[in-house]
Length: 115
Image 1 (spheres, rainbow, N blue to C red):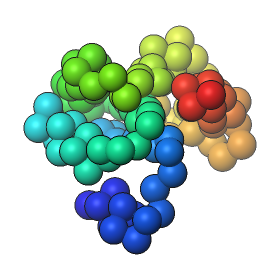
Image 2 (image 1 turned 135 degrees about the horizontal axis):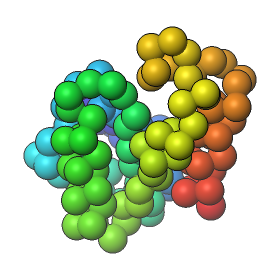
Image 3 (image 1 turned 60 degrees about the vertical axis):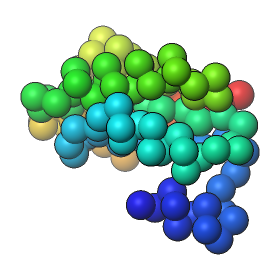
Protein backbone atom coordinates (compact mmCIF):
# COMPACT_ATOMS: atom_id res chain seq x y z
CA UNK A 1 0.00 0.00 0.00
CA UNK A 2 1.37 3.40 -0.98
CA UNK A 3 0.42 4.95 2.37
CA UNK A 4 2.53 2.38 4.21
CA UNK A 5 5.49 3.08 1.95
CA UNK A 6 5.19 6.83 2.47
CA UNK A 7 4.88 6.37 6.22
CA UNK A 8 7.96 4.11 6.28
CA UNK A 9 10.12 6.85 4.77
CA UNK A 10 8.58 9.67 6.81
CA UNK A 11 6.90 11.26 3.80
CA UNK A 12 3.42 11.78 5.23
CA UNK A 13 2.29 15.27 6.12
CA UNK A 14 0.06 16.28 8.99
CA UNK A 15 -2.90 16.24 6.58
CA UNK A 16 -3.41 13.30 4.22
CA UNK A 17 -5.98 13.17 1.41
CA UNK A 18 -7.30 9.76 0.39
CA UNK A 19 -9.16 9.51 -2.91
CA UNK A 20 -9.92 5.86 -3.62
CA UNK A 21 -12.79 3.66 -4.67
CA UNK A 22 -13.26 4.79 -8.26
CA UNK A 23 -11.67 1.58 -9.53
CA UNK A 24 -13.27 -0.85 -7.11
CA UNK A 25 -14.96 -1.43 -3.77
CA UNK A 26 -13.71 -0.14 -0.43
CA UNK A 27 -14.91 -1.84 2.73
CA UNK A 28 -15.07 -0.89 6.39
CA UNK A 29 -12.03 -3.12 6.94
CA UNK A 30 -10.13 -1.26 4.21
CA UNK A 31 -11.04 2.03 5.87
CA UNK A 32 -9.93 0.84 9.30
CA UNK A 33 -6.67 -0.51 7.86
CA UNK A 34 -6.01 2.88 6.26
CA UNK A 35 -6.72 4.73 9.50
CA UNK A 36 -4.43 2.35 11.37
CA UNK A 37 -1.61 3.21 8.99
CA UNK A 38 -2.40 6.90 9.43
CA UNK A 39 -2.37 6.88 13.22
CA UNK A 40 -0.69 10.08 14.35
CA UNK A 41 -1.80 12.14 11.34
CA UNK A 42 -3.75 15.17 12.51
CA UNK A 43 -6.37 15.04 9.71
CA UNK A 44 -7.28 12.50 7.06
CA UNK A 45 -9.62 13.73 4.32
CA UNK A 46 -11.51 11.03 2.42
CA UNK A 47 -12.98 12.03 -0.95
CA UNK A 48 -16.25 10.34 -1.93
CA UNK A 49 -16.45 8.84 -5.39
CA UNK A 50 -18.48 9.66 -8.47
CA UNK A 51 -18.34 6.71 -10.83
CA UNK A 52 -20.94 4.90 -12.90
CA UNK A 53 -20.15 1.53 -11.36
CA UNK A 54 -22.14 -0.77 -9.07
CA UNK A 55 -19.81 -0.15 -6.14
CA UNK A 56 -20.16 3.67 -6.01
CA UNK A 57 -22.78 3.74 -3.26
CA UNK A 58 -21.04 0.97 -1.30
CA UNK A 59 -17.77 2.92 -1.33
CA UNK A 60 -19.42 6.19 -0.32
CA UNK A 61 -21.31 4.48 2.50
CA UNK A 62 -18.08 2.88 3.77
CA UNK A 63 -16.30 6.25 3.67
CA UNK A 64 -19.16 8.08 5.40
CA UNK A 65 -19.46 5.45 8.13
CA UNK A 66 -15.69 5.30 8.56
CA UNK A 67 -15.33 9.05 8.97
CA UNK A 68 -18.01 8.93 11.69
CA UNK A 69 -15.85 6.46 13.67
CA UNK A 70 -12.63 8.51 13.69
CA UNK A 71 -12.29 12.04 15.07
CA UNK A 72 -9.31 12.82 12.81
CA UNK A 73 -11.16 11.77 9.63
CA UNK A 74 -13.15 14.15 7.47
CA UNK A 75 -15.26 13.71 4.35
CA UNK A 76 -14.99 15.77 1.16
CA UNK A 77 -18.27 14.99 -0.60
CA UNK A 78 -17.21 14.93 -4.23
CA UNK A 79 -20.09 12.56 -5.10
CA UNK A 80 -22.74 15.16 -4.23
CA UNK A 81 -20.95 18.04 -5.95
CA UNK A 82 -20.18 15.97 -9.05
CA UNK A 83 -23.75 14.67 -9.36
CA UNK A 84 -24.97 18.25 -9.64
CA UNK A 85 -22.57 18.99 -12.53
CA UNK A 86 -22.56 16.28 -15.22
CA UNK A 87 -21.21 18.86 -17.68
CA UNK A 88 -17.83 18.72 -15.92
CA UNK A 89 -17.10 15.17 -17.10
CA UNK A 90 -15.83 13.54 -20.24
CA UNK A 91 -17.91 11.07 -22.24
CA UNK A 92 -17.47 8.28 -19.67
CA UNK A 93 -19.07 10.38 -16.93
CA UNK A 94 -16.18 9.66 -14.56
CA UNK A 95 -13.03 11.38 -15.80
CA UNK A 96 -12.49 15.12 -15.68
CA UNK A 97 -10.76 17.12 -18.39
CA UNK A 98 -7.43 18.44 -17.08
CA UNK A 99 -7.77 22.07 -15.96
CA UNK A 100 -11.51 22.01 -16.67
CA UNK A 101 -14.09 23.40 -14.25
CA UNK A 102 -14.65 19.99 -12.66
CA UNK A 103 -10.95 19.52 -11.90
CA UNK A 104 -10.87 23.01 -10.41
CA UNK A 105 -13.98 22.28 -8.33
CA UNK A 106 -12.49 19.03 -7.03
CA UNK A 107 -9.26 20.79 -6.09
CA UNK A 108 -11.21 23.55 -4.30
CA UNK A 109 -13.32 20.98 -2.43
CA UNK A 110 -10.19 19.19 -1.20
CA UNK A 111 -8.45 22.47 -0.30
CA UNK A 112 -11.47 23.53 1.76
CA UNK A 113 -11.52 20.21 3.60
CA UNK A 114 -7.82 20.59 4.37
CA UNK A 115 -8.06 24.18 5.60
